[in-house]
Structures are given as C-alpha cells and as structure tokens.
Length: 292
Image 1 (spheres, helix red, strand yellow):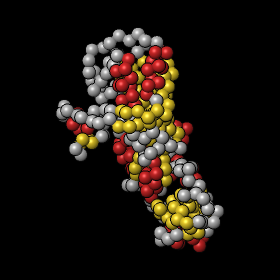
Image 2 (spheres, helix red, strand yellow; image 1 turned 180 degrees about the horizontal axis):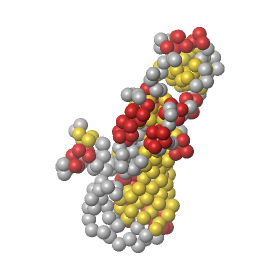
Image 3 (cartoon, one colour; image 1 turned 120 degrees about the vertical axis):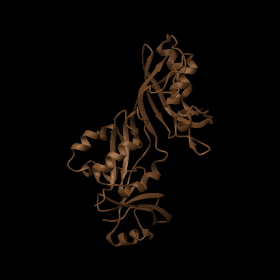
Image 4 (cartoon, helix red, strand yellow; image 1 turned 90 degrees about the vertical axis):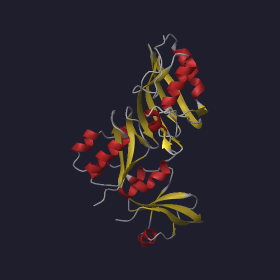
C-alpha cells in the first residue's frame, strides 16, 4: 500500500538532499518521494519530504519562505563560498566590532541583487554551474533578484559571527556570507548552516534519520494533513461529492464562497484535493490526490 503524506526530516551534515530521499524511499517502501527545497550537504535542519500522492503538492511550495541560523567565518573566502571549499587567498586579519559587522549586514536586507555561487545548481547553457566549476571551467553567472526579509548578526566571537536569517525562495546564504566578507575587506565564507523552517514546517516537528529507522511505522510520523498549506481553508466534502471530485468534476461547497483555493477532505484526515473556485460556491479540482 502506498505511503501518502508529508514527513519533516532533520537532515544531518554530510548527506545530500537526494541521499535523504533515497533513505526514506527504503524506509517507507514508497518510490514516489520528493523534497521541498534542497539543502547543501554541509547544511542541517528542516527538509520536508512529500510521499506518494502528496508529491503533487510540491508545486505549492516553490516560493516558500525559509528560515536559517548559522555562522559566518571571516578572514578568507573559499571557491564554494562555504567551509567545504578551498581558500581563494591568504588569511586576512580580522579586527572589527560586532556593531561594524551589524552595520555591514544591514546592506543585505530587502530586495537585492545577488550573484549565485559558482558551485550551485544554476544552469549555464543547460549545464549546472557546479559541473563546470568542478572541471575548473569559467563560470559566468548573472545576478538574480532575491529577497532577504531578516538578516541579523547575533554574536561575534573572534573571526566567527552567528546569524539568523529569513529569506524568500532562491536566496543563497553562501553568497550573503561571501559578499559580506567582500564588503568588510577580509573575505568570508559560510561556516555552518541550519535550516529552522520551510513554510509552515519547523524544527520542532522534524525527525532524525535514526528516529525514522527506529519507527515501527514511518506513516505515524507524517504531518497531519489539516496542517498542510494553512493559507488554504479546509472543508469536508459531503459524501455525495467525493465521486465527482475523484473524476475531476466541479462540486458545490457553500461554506467556501470567498476562498480562491481550498483543501477538500473526506472526513477529518484524508486530503482528497486542492480545489479552485470557478464561480460563486462552485469549485473545480485543481490537484486530485485520490480517495481511499
């Protein structure tokens, strides 16, 4: 029987997001598994996974806000913009104050232009930049517009600054660290990174891979469907409407006269579709997840 649900994993350092997906495929005995936002191998924290029919919901998370905490190390930049890369120059002395770092960090808030790291998945003529960078080929990426909603320097201890950030999808915190070092004139790179939230999913509900391995049934750890996509109201469909929904036909949902998109349930816990309002209280299934 297929496993259909959303599972939040606390990704460990040293694994790719794809490695985690492969592990969960085996544990849940479910081939259809995807993630809602890649984490670099060195990064840890919230990695939401969608399993089975729930993979159809991934489209609604493409622009999800993400929150992080981590450390930036000053004194030298690296070719990957993080601690896994090679230094691009000799070490520089670091002697600024916390207030000076905070003043420089304020330049990286709001809507800004950002150059993605050379070692990234951004494509150049159809080839991921990291593949060119690994072959020592020139990587010419173009700046992109990103939105940094929060970037706070919390601590400064020697050459390391602790930070907290909240960003729109598509923002590279490796580039923020690198560019902050450039601005301060000493070079810098991302030393550690932990993702604390993706959309509505936080660390408080994340499970380690060890916990998943020891669980009698991984499905017991799924996020309750009513908590998914909280921006869409929930409605329980009458029994007579379920067959129409399953066939992709429009249904009348009188209590949902204003919402553009709604989550439609059979009972309390079975999410059967995301429906789009077409007129008045008439809703057409946009994404059908199936019944039973």
